[in-house]
Length: 234
Ligand code: ADE
Image (cartoon, rainbow, N blue to C red; front, side, top):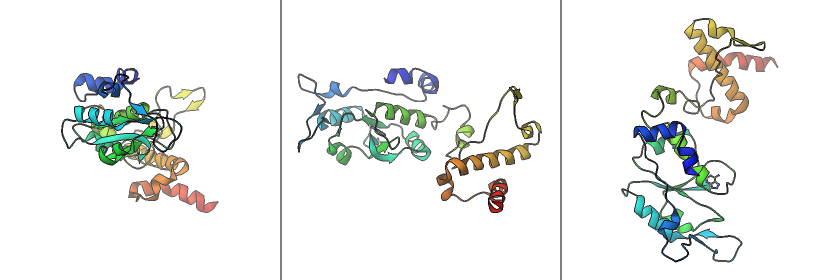
């Protein structure tokens, strides 16, 4: 599964450049029994299987290079992944991600081994693998030198607490759908104001929660005014 994702795109290039290393480990390699069993039936009696603690502790102790290396368990019960967490992860020299499966993971892993749990959203995946890949992909963008201009990561939506402004490229007129005139004006200030306005409009419409706890800059206020006025008129 991991091969499919990490053998292409930005992650692959980051690995080739030596900006990051990704190592995938099979918990079965850290079992000691004949059947290489990583899970068992839950105490207390219920359906399904639960990950055993021993292979997970053994695997983490094997791969962790320093006691400072944070260990995270991927689970729907975790802290929701966002841009801030992705950036935080990119700041560590090593991060260990544990992928759970089946009904769950023995609680002693999250209590005594993992610093935290990470969720990629309020839905249940069949395993933590896809979630781990999402975490890696989101974090890698914050490793210096991975994304072309570091500036472009800084200006990404969410870092600035809002959605992106719309982008256009050629042709100018596609089946009668025209690129907004302002983008040909050559007036960078005007373009910037227009972009702020569009980004905020979109954020207002689709993700008003992002704006709730965020003060607006004077520039943004200028961009928002027409919307607020429109509202007042209604
Ligand atoms: N494992 C199963 N569901 C998950 C989720 N939403 N986030 C992270 N890990 C998971």
